[in-house]
Amino acid sequence: MGSSSAAAPASSKSCPPRPIDLSGRLPIIQVVAGALIDADGRVLIAQRPEGKAMAGLWEFPGGKIEGGEIPEAALARELYEELGIDVCPSCMLPFSFSSHSYADFHLLMPLFLIRNWDGQPRPLVAQDLKWVRPQRLGDYPMPAADLPLVAMLQDHL
Ligand SMILES: Nc1nc2c([nH]c(=O)n2[C@@H]2O[C@H](COP(=O)(O)OP(=O)(O)OP(=O)(O)O)[C@@H](O)[C@H]2O)c(=O)[nH]1
Ligand SMILES: [Mg+2]
Picture 1 (cartoon, rainbow, N blue to C red):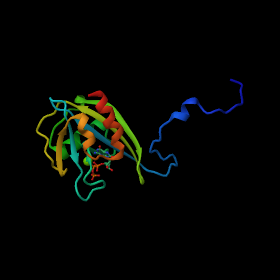
Picture 2: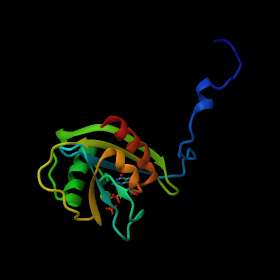
Picture 3: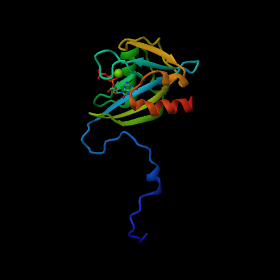
């Protein structure tokens, strides 16, 4: 208090590089994703279809939040459209989120953990689905925004 020195906070020196664009030029895209976890503790990932951005990469099922939707409603809709399963919003456990600048948009994506659903997931949109042990998720190329989420899942599950 009262000092005019403008020393940077000590923590700023140790901040790891993060892919965030602070210029304000990027539109924010709000997406919601779910990590389905089966009885063996494996996580479901889906391979993005040909013709879409980031085709071939593996991701957590989900998609863009549409106008007026809350994240849980959007995720229930996306999981029905993409996997043919019914998930009750109260079974979606908020886990973490990604805030990541790609070249042309900034992604804001909450990730929910889901252990209960009705139906058998089918690749209605994805090229392929895989149930993967958390420690093996690194074997599958995923979008850059997902990498911190994968690390958190590996620590948590
Ligand atoms: N669903 C999902 N999208 C992700 C993940 N990671 C990530 O960067 N994204 C990006 O979030 C954006 C939204 O994804 P999406 O293509 O699934 O959206 P959508 O299901 O509504 O499809 P649509 O826009 O063709 O209708 C894409 O640019 C996608 O690459 C992820 O783990 N899951
Ligand atoms: Mg999608």
